[in-house]
Amino acid sequence: MPRLDPHSYNESTQPETETLDWRARVDFRTRRLHAEVTLTLKEASAGPLDLDTRELDIRAVVDAQGKPLPFQLAPAEPILGSRLRIELPAGLRQLTVRYRTSPEASALQWLTPSQTAGGQHPFLFSQCQAIHARSVIPLQDTPRIRVRYKAALTLPKALKAVMAAGFVRREEPGVEAVEHYEMPQPIPPYLLAFAVGSLTSKELGPRSRVWAEPELLEDAAAEFEDVDAMLRVAESLFGPYDWERFDLLTMPPSFPYGGMENPRLTFLTPTLLAGDKSLVNVVAHELAHSWTGNLVTNASAEHFWLNEGFTVFAERRILEALEGKEVTALHAALGRRSLETAIEHFRAHPQHTVLRTHLTGIDPDEVFSQVPYEKGYLLLCALEEAVGRQAFDAYLKRYIDTFRFRALTTEDWVAFTERELPGALVQVNAEAYLHQPGLPPAAPSLRSSRLEGLQRLKGTVPSAEAVRDWTPAEWQLFLEWLPTDTPRETIRALDERFHFTKSTNSEVLVSWLVAALRARYAPALERAESFLGEVGRMKYLKPLYSTLHSTSEYRGKAREIFQKYAERYHPIARQGIEGILSRA
Ligand code: BES
Ligand code: ZN
Image (tube, rainbow, N blue to C red; front, top):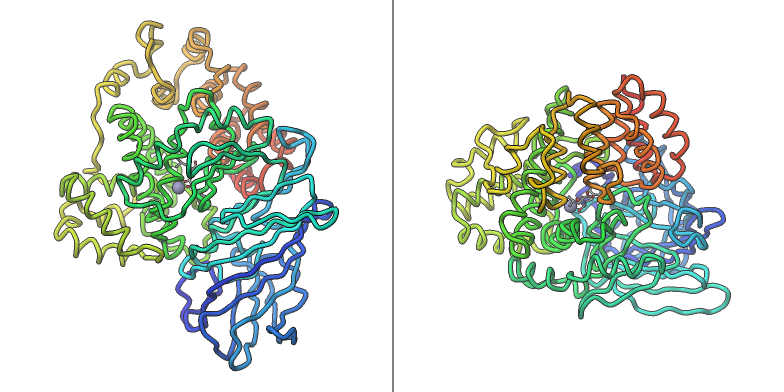
């Protein structure tokens, strides 16, 4: 039977879920959700219904009258989890699964009070992309099937629950509180998201507020205060914002990503709080997903570039409108550098550097890289260059309009683009981006005078005068461009002049630490060790652990640091680093 998504047990001939009604009790003591979910199908149908699950303890499956339905939970497969097959009697449209989650649920991180900013209350959050929703709710975990949902979370009264959905009400019946949410727009399951903790909020604009632990709230509000202007710019570029609100949630430091575009409530790493708004391009990125990703959605992880490549392109259009072409060119150059690094990283597995991937038997987390982001971005830049900005902007709007609230494949995209921009795909050699590994020879690059200035200083120890007006992006680029064999004396001289080891900009700091560790510069080891205990963002953990692991003197240290801090990291991050440390 046809399975269209290699990461789901869903069979395309089976009925699709239309809505979910989810009720869960958050138990911090046992680290479990005690839950039940009612699935309403688009149409009544008899026969088997296969749901995705991972490490769920299924207690019962019942129909709308509470009558048990026969089900089978298959043994777990390593990537997909366990298929839950339910036999539907004729005429059934609604069923309820009673279950509890595992303390090791891959989508959830349970934090002790000491892992939070306030230190007083525990914290729980979800991260479902790409295929972790199934560890929280038994469902058809493929972005091809969108659902609306209602949710009721029961939690300790001292805490607040937030969801990537519309708030309905909070009740406080006894010692616990119940928070009701409702998601009226249909979403792919990977966008289901919630967090529970000591959370407060501050208004940022008519459609936005920021949530954070009280200790971080003022800093977060200051860093993100321009979000409303960003929202208006994005609407002028991509059309009306369809999700009513754009709220932000400042996560605990172990959040494994920079940002996650959970609809109505973007999740953001606290490492963005640099104090100078220099990292708000991540907010622009997550906002841009409101159109590319959340409205127009990749049909499976094999088409992930449609989410991320388009979103990087949209992010940089927002950035250009707000901060100009020079700043955007610096970000594009940083992206280009990270693409080169990713291609180098996959030199033994070039098939992971094509945009249209083939992932049967492959865990999407394992092959996550900057390739879909930056190679996708370059393909869209090449197309824009070929047809001109005006025509490309119109094309983008039609793309969003045509596929809104739908999922598409790369093949659907090619057909659409051939129709809308005849000849353009051939002209830019889209084939090389979509199906061939590595960097396409004719890939475009942005020109800028700041970039040229920077290029002239590559590998030198510049004078204080030369760097007087550098932004963090320029510092980072300068560091990223340091030759891998930069002598320790040069590293020391740079640190003495510019104090990188003390940088409070996480991007600059990590680029610096990687370069300095390679040169075996001792102060960097100490700083890397403390930093690895402070943050859990994979973008930082991976290069730091990789560099330590591939530097023979530091290999043992890498293991030691990981053993010390592994418990603090998110399950997805922990798995990623275990992979790095087990490399030869
Ligand atoms: N959707 C991604 C994060 C993600 C990707 C989570 C795949 C799980 C699986 C998010 O939009 C993202 O790309 N975040 C980037 C931000 C950046 C590109 C500005 C990050 O986390 O660094
Ligand atoms: Zn993204």
